[in-house]
Structure formats: C-alpha cells, structure tokens
Image 1 (cartoon, rainbow, N blue to C red):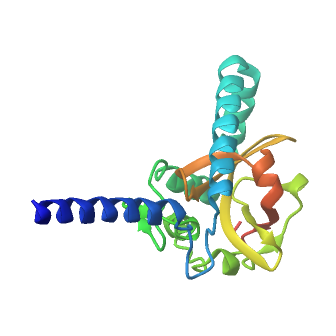
Image 2: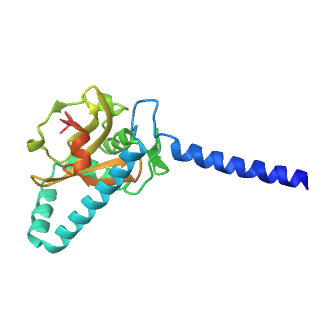
Image 3: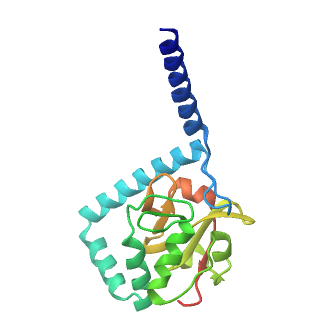
Length: 205
C-alpha cells in the first residue's frame, strides 16, 4: 500500500513538473531566430485572427478588389510568382526551429526553401537575409520583397515575404509563425507594426 502511494505521488509530481516546464519554456533559437514571450505569442495569434478575418470578408464582398488583385498577380514577374507559389504551398506547416521541410519550418528556412524554386540560394538566417538586397521603404513595397522584424535594427529575429500589396494599409506577407506555423498576415496589423524593422528587395528581383 505504501509502495502504491509513493508511486502515485511520484507520478503526480512528474506530471505537474512537466506541465510547469512546458508552460514556462520560452520559444528560443540558438541562431537568435523567433524569440517570443508568451505575451508576444498571444498577441501574434490575436493579430493573425483579426487580420485574416478582415481580409477574407473584404475579398468576399468587394469584387473590384478581387479583380485588381487577380490582375496584379498576372503581371507579377515570373520568378516572383514562382517563389510566392512555392512559399504558399507550405501554408499550415507547423513551426520547427531549423526546419526546411513539410514536417516543420522556421521563418528563414521557409524563404530559403521557396527561393530554391528559382535556383537562388538565400543566406540561412533572418539577420543574414536582411542584408541580401537593397532597403525598400514601406510605401514602395512589392510582391517578393522581404520584411524583417525584431526588437531593434541590430536585433532582427524574424522574416517574411510580401505576397500581395492590396492597399496602403494592407500588405500581405507569408512567414513561419512560432505559434501558428506558415501563415499570411497583414504587415499593418498592430502587432507586426510594433516589431517591424525594415524591408529588403532581393537582387534577383
């Protein structure tokens, strides 16, 4: 009886300890990629849901927007269109540090893999990718441009790629989110504006 009680107590202790570790463990990468606190992850989820819902509704109710967006995609450079198509093929793939496959992707890995579709090798980390090309002002953003996030210009920790320029306050970008996997969001959502650092146009475009 005493042995059974001891075993049960040990089991309960291990369950509590495991739950505690999982809830407090930060999302961290040795490369400095994708560090997020629990509060930042929650904010990212809220921004993604609001952004996605608003965009889906506007697309469904505004035929003029649909026409202009379709036209803009027809006019995309062939290489830009190919890279965007490749990136979107990973939509829904979960986040995985160091990942470059459908099992899991990290933010810079998504772009490395997508650019391979046009035989271009990107630097591996978001910080290195931020130096690959020339800086672009947000008002001049185009599909295929890379957008970078972090706590400062010297601490870039996240990257995405512009997929659609819809209006002055809606620019869609695809990225591998730590909390939601590969997803498209609006660059002008409050959460992303707070951490936005810069945009770069790759030399191949």
